[in-house]
Amino acid sequence: MTQIEEMDALDRPVDLDGYWRALLLDFSRQQGRIVARWMMANGADFYMSIPAINEIHERTFSENICWPFLFREIDQLVFYNRDPLAPYEAQSLPELDLLSKHSAFSVDEFELGIVITPLAP
Image 1 (cartoon, rainbow, N blue to C red):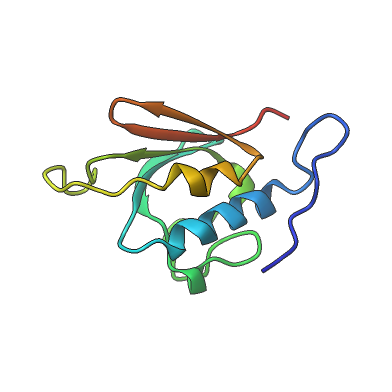
Image 2: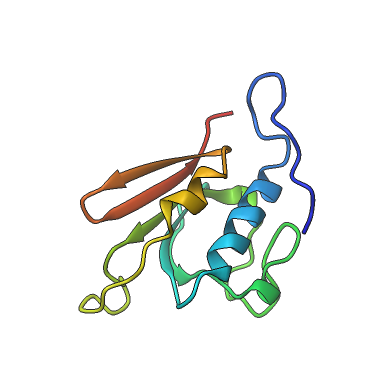
């Protein structure tokens, strides 16, 4: 796994791609499919499962993923306690213990799930 860089003097992630990559790799190691709502910097908003480990590259996903984007383009990931693609099925949320080791993100819980946002630069 790539070494994640430290925060700069203004508490901005030096390598936001690297922070997202580390978080996505941890998610992909969890058992089962995890669907998230991906809210992007360009305004795109879609649902997609967290890709498998072998699909997560240094700064983007493999060519097999439909939407090519850099990880730094992610504004928020929203995880619901119900699978948005199959709303009658419960979905395991990412474990808060797992999320706590990723200090470059804020994690907010709400009634239906959790929201993950990079800390403001």
